[in-house]
Image (cartoon, rainbow, N blue to C red; front, side, top):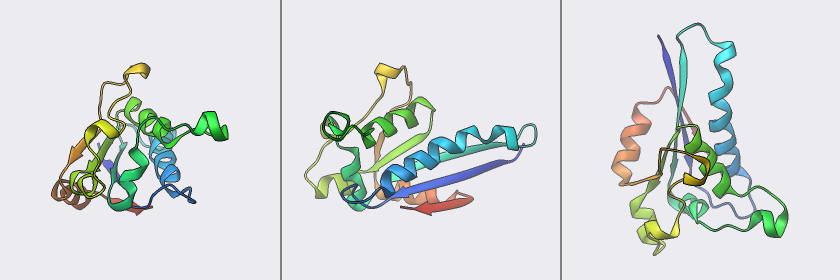
Amino acid sequence: MPTTKLGFIVQRAGYKSENPKLALTHAIASQSVEVYLNDGDIVTADIAFIGDGVLNCKKDQKAMDIYKLTSTETHIKMSLLLDLNVMVCKEDLDRFGMTENDIVLDAEEFGAELTVKVVPFAEITKMMEGMNHLLFF
């Protein structure tokens, strides 16, 4: 039962760029490929926010209210609903003076059981080493 592991690394802020939301969209879409796989094969996706990318995780985004667009916050919550592993770099949160209280941590309102993990960069590096494919956004 082969597993293909995809790693999505978000390293840019979402300002003037769709890259972070594209990373999340691709990670979410990766979970719908079972129709193309052999029986027993699976695809997993991990998402890590590093550097300026941690700014995408800010909670209480008002994109729908202001711009009539789905927020990156909602995409993160949908990732959790699909049981994707979502990590945020602790050192980068510290660099911006942010804490876990400032970011999206769960999607309880959607019934998601997984939560965002705030982890040291060393753990993100370890995750990247185990991937078959890494995509940087």
